[in-house]
Image 1: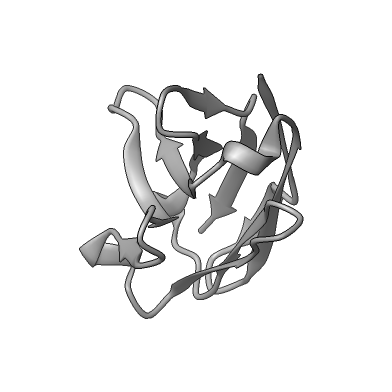
Image 2: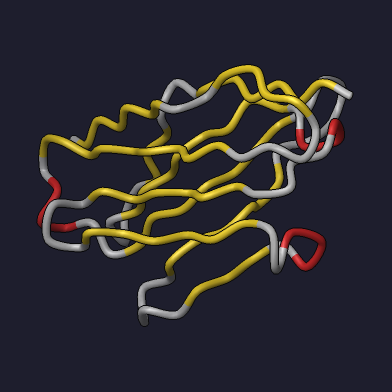
Length: 115
């Protein structure tokens, strides 16, 4: 089992920045992919950015250049630096980890961007 805890969300004005953190615990040695997703009210959960099993990064096309994902792969920490935030970035941001058999999700952290 893997547990994920996100932190760093909050309220920010448009144009501001936030840095989200996700810490994995439990059976972390088997984790081979981690990333961030988000879900806005009334919308489906969508990929924000992730590290894949082959160590590549994936970004939602619309977020490239504003969001950056980084990690500490030994400690199974993953971070999301979000710059130039827009009101449409308002959502609950979820951390996801995969071990090749199961996907694990955190409880989410709310990001609210005011105009």
